[in-house]
Image (cartoon, rainbow, N blue to C red):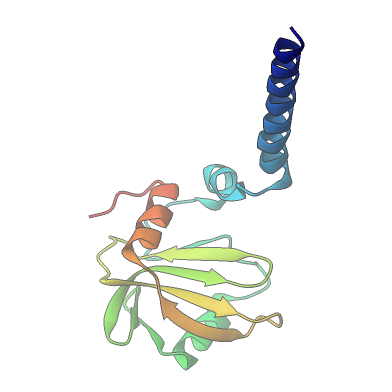
Length: 144
């Protein structure tokens, strides 16, 4: 009988701890991307390139200049990196990120732009196809 009481207590405590972990993670923000993408970040339009979550203080011209200095070129509404058309650009700074998608998702590569604490581009690297597909799905777009 004492064994049965311990088993019920352990199950109860396990349930409480699991519930706290699930709700704690949800409210602490470990999964904010789905909520952010679903509400205010995705504004898909027929514009050549969609800039999602871009800070209003930074104008597009300076952004294009920064990209050009790192080898990311813009030609006719699409971006190119090392001569290849870019499908997705993930521009990540210390406190925020935004994404750019090729209008028809015809790019061959996807890239990450990583910034330092001052907002200057630190490096540009390739994204895996899996990472790019995940971002495309989150934005509600259909991959070709």
